[in-house]
Length: 229
Image (cartoon, rainbow, N blue to C red; front, side, top):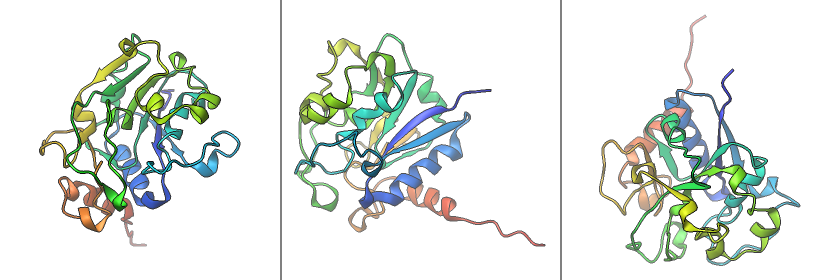
């Protein structure tokens, strides 16, 4: 029996539809069994106890780093933000897992064009921006991400991977597995796109790049096939 690949997805009450649309986007294209775990704060009572920072744009800004802990520090797990859709087989992403690294990410090198994003949240600018929005964790090598550390570490310590002994432990994934909508030009074959500025489910971004893809996946998710008796 094939073991499902593990996908942990950031969950925020402001973007519930985004979570479910992402999951369906994976299901419709995956060639392998998958399991989804929402990183939802209401499920983490007694585990995640830090107060919300005013710079957080989502509830899972820091709790995402509990993925190795929730995976019992075993095997490989993928964390993704919820404002993403898969446009190709997620098995291809897991096939890139390389035991030489503790974590693998898309190493963006850019400065956000805007100072704000969805729901008027501040667009924070820092080194390694958006690297942590898609992370392929080699869980056994991420044991420094204890619940205590994740609760107490600063945002930059977490998002700039200060929990690793060296940046050499960070492997590179192709950028098109975290293609930033509105920051990068349209790319027809991008396998995974990230509505980092705001998804089509927000009025202000209803006509953003790849909006049609997102709406088609959502419509398919909501469809019901009527069968005659």
